[in-house]
Image (cartoon, rainbow, N blue to C red; front, top):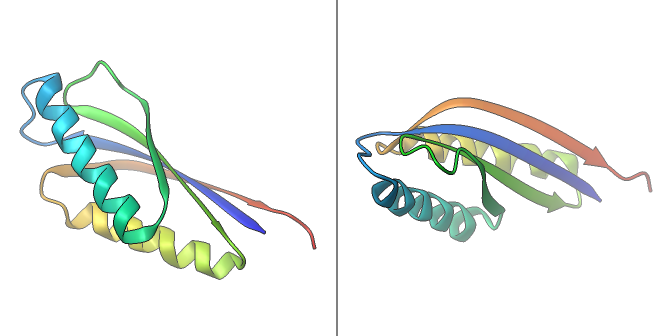
Length: 97
């Protein structure tokens, strides 16, 4: 079993309130969960209206699958016009067979 966690800091473009931020964050989370089958949660920067930090988790039988999906998630975030990726950190956990 292989597990990956991706921490992504995002700038919310054009956000002028926490309400606008929540709308964008919900949209990002919905896209990632439906497209890639990952678990996503806002893990930091809850009170900042132009920034958020998301935690994204994935479990897979092979390490290579994790890497492919996480790269696809990063590309999907880069392609969005309403957010800017500021930083990403990836952690892997592999359980010996």
